[in-house]
Amino acid sequence: MISRVLRWAAVAAVCLGIVPAWAQTDAGLYEAAKKEGTVVWYVGGPLEGMNAIAGQFQKEFPGVKIETMRLVGIAQYQRFMDETGAKKYIADLLQNTDYPSISQLAEDGHIAAWKVPTFDRIPPQFRLKEFAYAQYASTNGIVYNVNKVTPDEVKLLESDWAAILDPRFKGRFSASPMKCGVCYAPVHMFMDPKFKDRYGAAFIDKIAAQKPASYSEVLVTIDRVIAGEQDFTISGWEAAAAVKLLDGAPIRWVFPKPTPEFGNSWLGISKYAPHPNATRLFMNWLMGDAGQIAMEKLYGSKGTLSGVPEQRPYVNDAWYHAPVEYYAVDWKRWDENYHKDMDLWAAALKRAK
Image 1: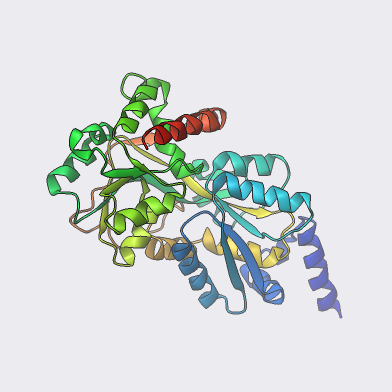
Image 2: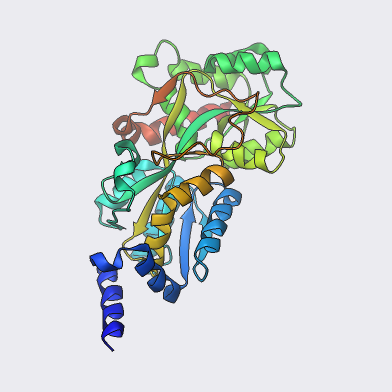
């Protein structure tokens, strides 16, 4: 009877956002998680990779099922807020690719605070207090089809983003106006005041003059490269390309200088999570060694947890060259200019048609 009361007390406390110390261990959470049985995970990354990661967790924690639904960036924020406003609490865990969205959710009290056991091993730039954590670092690049782009062209594209303006590339590449973090990061860099003479709005106009194909869904840009319909895409990033590469796609990628890299796919637990214990267990795992290793092996992106040995399977291949010059995003400017810049970018891509 006492243990039953304690279990119910733990569940009630978690639902109220008060998690007792004795319930914070993975062993304690696992027992409670098995009773809940499910985590509904709204993801922003490619489903193949996210499902593979979820599958690894399910192997390690039998009895807890991860259900994924892909909703990207602003669209995920709007879906979650619509559900919350209607008091239809579906999502347990959000993985949002738009930092301002997850930041706003935390500020407005929709994200539950949860200090993962590995908190001190997560660099400050990859955590939002105790509300959200960047599961991995997104690194923007140019994803190309190995059968469509020559070695000399690969070297040229690797040199600088301005290389895409070379006349030989006119009509051979794609981009996406989708409002998501990895879609905006290069635009954010192009519009950085310190690059006004190097890039700026004039550079975006020149990109449009190259007649890139435009796809509203960012992953389609990579799929069309794989299919050989486009030679490369400038709306690519390492994680998405790595998932396709692991499936045997004829693609590679390069990192033009400078290369935007930033914390992406921010994980935050819904304050209204229907399965709070299972969700906290899953969060602990995702941001722990096992989850980060699974992510690098199965998803192919660089983890954010310090002290984890390199696990990405392609980094030692001869074709792979790590970024030489990184670009750090400015979150304040990102938040202030996101919609304005992306509207400018979308308008430019529309003119390119």
